[in-house]
Length: 137
Image 1 (cartoon, helix red, strand yellow):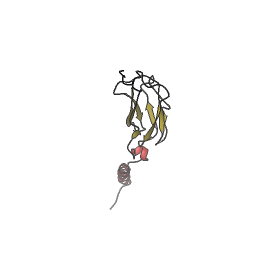
Image 2: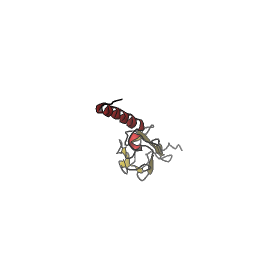
Image 3: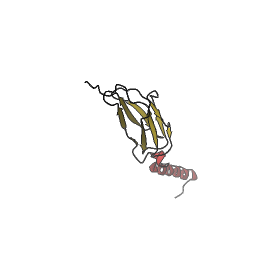
Image 4: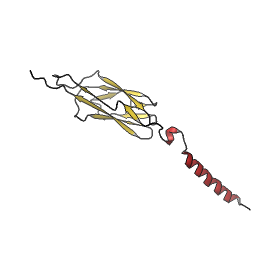
């Protein structure tokens, strides 16, 4: 049986495409994150002591750890008047950032920080700051 060179090139190209498509190509970060993307803690809150009718103040901080997903990660802070984050970019899986509270109250459902990975997957961290309950004499 006689084959032309151009038909062999076509067959080779098709076989190459099938092989590349079936393996997914790229490393784990490019093909998809091997571990589910999440943060810990997912939410946290601070409440002032009973009788204190102001919200938690400065010097309260929490470390948030990033698990899974594809590094690097970007941290978005839509409430810079209430919250400070130590960095807006976390380079490594398992990395962390610190959230500092600047004082002030939030609504009962809180405010959120958004963490986005290299593949544009997103998770949020919810923060709630509440004043203390009134104390009646």
